[in-house]
Image (cartoon, rainbow, N blue to C red):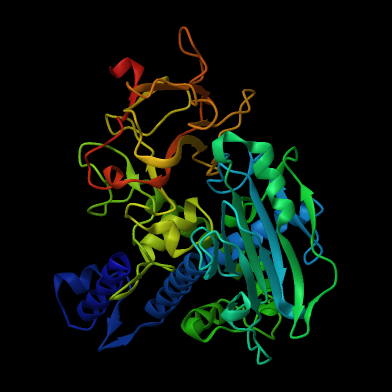
Length: 491
């Protein structure tokens, strides 16, 4: 938001100088005005600049919407049909998706509300779940962070404009209404004690069905296990080219208008995307929109990996940064409005939102820190060797992990090792918690024991997420802190 304000201020100042008469500033203006009016040359250039600027703003705002379509498309490409099946997976590097991790198995379903409400019957258990709308707006939390608090319940998701009968909480229902027809249900099954097969089997106890006031109707969605499937649930193939706008137009045509986004629909109309009308840009407009997609993506990646915000680090002498920058919010809300820079940062590297994801207090579901630089402040390089020293014990009631991601795909690093994470429930379960553990990253295994090593790829940058599940007070009050990632030659 601060960045946008600076841009608008610069434009305003430029306009003042342009209309102020002879001066050095006026002479330097490349788009001259005459007696307060734009010359034909000025009008031509200003219109071109305006079209590009508005397209970039529209791109950044609607990026989460197209990113969500990437998730839906990934499921469909794996043979999972909307409204008929849902996918589960013990994920690994073969599943491409923005900062997906292998700490817990995932379950995901496209909830199509065009045929009416959908019911998620969640049993008691160690589940963490949420529902997001097509714009990655928060609709509901389920399981441990939700209103059922892990005790189970019937989570009813209503379509936009629903006016029918709704059951109340006394009947065991938790009711939420979505502003979109297509929604994502995402559920984690916690591998308590490192029991991955049990966590996967727990998905079988969840029932997802169509609901009417008379009760559920039709069969429950069938489960498809995609653990072994190479699946791409990202928007990478669209995000930097004209296809981004084609995907967005399709969504705009299929989904109802959301009143709170009216100004942003207005921006889309100016670039030719308008509900109920065909999107038929000419060659010049296509080129402009492709350029806007590239520039918009690059601006978002700067927010993700080169943020200059104050307070972004939990420890001033470390390069670990908070991933979520507006604690305890569902959509990056602040007293002044929506923090667009924080929103860009999150969606450039991650997916879905929930207030539970951004809490910064003991007992929260989880916390995430990001490091893209080594101890000297240099970006992490897949061709170099590094170590990370983690003091023990890590302040988490459940478990913790370190996962490595490719900077270009924002997905787990892919190598012949087929491993991108070191997890306290699995690879690190037998470490001595009375002394620090040293983790290794690089293209070559460390000397001696290589069980605590993740392979990286020369020529590709990477970054790490440090996750703590069930974080305790020491994770927030700075009485505990991890080391920086140290390049071996720099030690």
